[in-house]
Each structure stands twice: as structure tokens, then as C-alpha cells.
Length: 593
Image (cartoon, rainbow, N blue to C red; front, side, top):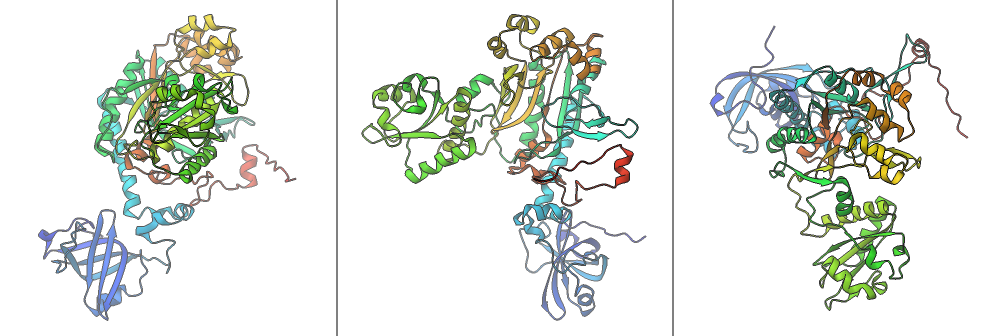
């Protein structure tokens, strides 16, 4: 069998001049200069090489070939007269003696220009993803992803963790999103579920006597897409440690992730470990989010007590009022109106404002209501001539979240408050164990039902029957946040079956419910489970942040679109009646009214 190539497309240098070489790749471009003279650009995974056509025979071999045809070139390397310093191979060119078509491109027109594919419509890119990936700029993200995963594996293994794979076909388990269900052919009416996370399995590994576990785990959740979240499936660095505390997990992840950010990150600055710890309630008060972007130097202030009696309706008693103040403000009314409109679009809530003029007087917006509390506002917010204040009012959580959006928009739009080129890391800790469900209005688990409540059984017993006290219980839960994104989530686990049952009783579920929902884990815990803790950084989101991409789909090899469709493979798709009969499923289509 003839060797397809002696060198790759990014390898040849001046030192190779005079050598007879064989290259193979895609014909990126053919620029004809004369009847028997042309420049051909050959591209493969490693780079591009210029091939110079100088004879009628070679011109006939390439004439009429469409771009992206796969060819083999046998020829001699020589020094280029006109060098290209932008190319690794820019000092040389290849003069061919034989050109062979290996795979013909049968399309005169491509869906997009390969090297400019990122400018094309996203759905077209996804449909022709195999062409999109030929673009070196697109391919580089996937290469980086491979390198990052290899580095994560190396670092975790060095720390004594064993990589153990867990099942894909498993039982449905409440993880906060919809399951993907798989019908069981041999068990009519029953279903497997694809794991939303390997949560129960990794805890069972701890009860089995494994001390440190990890895997690059596929997770499946039927949830809507966002810029930082792909629908369908994603991957995470899943890890768990036996006989471990919260600090053991946090320090381990810092030791693993900091080198990855330093080695592969777009930005050269990263928060030094140990990362700052911010309690959940403090984060909501100061930043209006449990995912604060600490690259912004602004903080939220509570001015409820100062403005409650000012006469402005939204500030009336019972509402919380939050403010974001910024100095040296030089923007006009059009800018302010755009800010308020954007806040309302994002949050569904209105905001209001005022400025401080050159004489130190409050002006514009709702300033006419604030005359009686001017001095208190100036002191509280540190106002000076040229200051701008934007405010949000409403129920406490709504006011916090709206102010959080204000902080982000003002901080990134007013110069001098956003230090973008860094990775600003922190741990959000002390999450509430319970919350009131927005839809149900009932007490629900806030973060995950598998967490150990701070204070253990006694905290639950002391709060039993008292909703306010239950809402005040914190859990041993933690999130890693970087630049406004949640990058990892974890907890010290509730390994005591008695405490687990009591925690579930608080949300209206009894021991039989726990046994039914988590039979293996509950039973395993009754045989003596070690204290354990873990977390799971998202691999896709990590790579997105390292590359600086704004969409997570840019770092996934074959992503779905925003509607959870694989346009390239045409999935999801209909199946035959026989396939449905085999798994005992009948399709009931609702008629449109």
C-alpha cells in the first residue's frame, strides 16, 4: 500500500528544501495565474502548505476540481521567493510531480466559506458541522477541549482519585430537571432514565469502600438551552471523597482547576487560591446573584429604611429597595432609558434612577421624591457630584435579582468598573437547605436533597413545624463561580439515613417515599456509610470560559441547536410502528384546537 503522506501540512520548513515529499489534505483554494501556472493551498489537520502548479500536466490534474476535494500531492520542497511570515510553512512551497484525487467534492457551491464558517447562520453550521469543523478556528476549540480533559484526568489521578465509569441506563431520580426516558422492552410500561448526574452511584461508591472517585461523566437533562448550557447532554468532572469535609473538596478542586486555567486560559490572571468564600445570603445582598461576576467592582446597597416614607409608590412599606451607585457618570438620558428598558426585558421588573448634579443636588428620574432623604442617601451611597444611582424595588428576592442585573449592566457599560481580562473566582457557600417553591408555594429543597443540613439532626428537630426556622437552615452546599458563571456545584452529603428521612419529612415525604425514590442509597447507608463530600465542575462550561467563547456550542464537537435538535443527524426523528410495538408504546397526538 502506498504511503499517503510523509509529512503533515504544518511541518515543512526551509531545512526540508530539496526533499521529495508526499502530502495529503483538502484543496482549500486554487488561484490560477496563467494557462499553466497556479497556486494551490493544501490544508490538513496540522496546517496549510502552498503547492505551485507550473506544468500543463499538473494543471490538468487540478483544473475543474471543486474546493474541499481531498488530494494527495507528491513533489519537491523549495524555498519561496515571496515568503509569508503569517504561516508556519510560509518559507517554502511544494512543486508537484503527481496529484491524485482521494475524495472528490461533488458540490460546486459550499454551504459557507470554510475559513469564515463562524460568520454563517448557526443552524447551517450545525447541519454541516463536519464542514464547520474543518475551519481551523473551530477545530482549535475541540483540540483544546481534548487537552483540558487529558489534563484534568492527569491531575485527578495524581491526587489519588480512581476513574470509575457509572451506568448510563438507570432509574429516574429527582435532580431538578426532566429525565430522558428509555422504554424497557422486556418490562412493559417501565422505563430506564439517562442519568442527570451520577449522584447516587458516586455516593454508593463511597459506601462500597472506594476512597476517591472521579470520571468525565456524561449527564442528560431535558432542559432548555442557554448561552452557557446545552440542551440534551453535557459533561462534568464528577468527583467524590470519603471521610472528607467541605474544605477538603474545595482545596482539591482549587489544586486541580487553577493549573488548568493558568495553562489553557485566554486570560493570564486568575484569583489566587484559596478562593474567597461568600455566603449565599451575602452574595444576594451585595451582588444580587448567587453567581456574582467579581470583575465588576460595584456592590448593591440596601436603602429601604432611608426611602420607605419618601412618597414614591414602589418604595412603600413592605417593599425592599436596592440601589447601585456609580461616580463620574457622563451619559445622557438616551443611555439611561436604554438601561432601564434592558433591565425590564431581562427581569420583567421596572427600575428607577436619579443623578447628582455639579452642585450636589439630586436631579432627574425620581429625584423630586427624595429631597427629604438626600443627606442620608449621600452618606449611605457615598455620592458626589456626577454620581448616578439606579434602583430596584419590590419583594426582597425580586429587588435583589433586579439590582443584580442593574449592577451587571451598569458595571460593564460605565467605563472603569469592569476588569474583564481575568478569571475572578469565588466559592458561594451556606446555601439554604429549603426554599418556597415559586410554582408550588410549598417548602422544597433549595439546591439538592442529598446535602447534609448544617447542625445535622438537631437543626431539623429544632425547626420542625416552623416554616421560618426551616427556611433559615443552611446546608453544607457550595458552588464555584467564575466571571458570573456557576462552574461547579457540590455538597457534603447526608450519609445518615435517619437525618435523610427527617430532611425529607420537612417537604412532606416520609420514610417510605425515601426508600421508594432512593432504594439502593438508603439501604446502603443502613450498612454504615462514611461521611463523604464531592462536587462536579462542568467540562463544557470550563472550556467555554478558557476559550472566551460566548456560546457553549462552540466548544462541543457535535452540539444540538437551541431547540434540542441535531440538525446534522436529523434527530429527534420518528420511528417505525414495529419499533414502538417492541417497547409497548402507543403515540397519542393531541389535536390542535
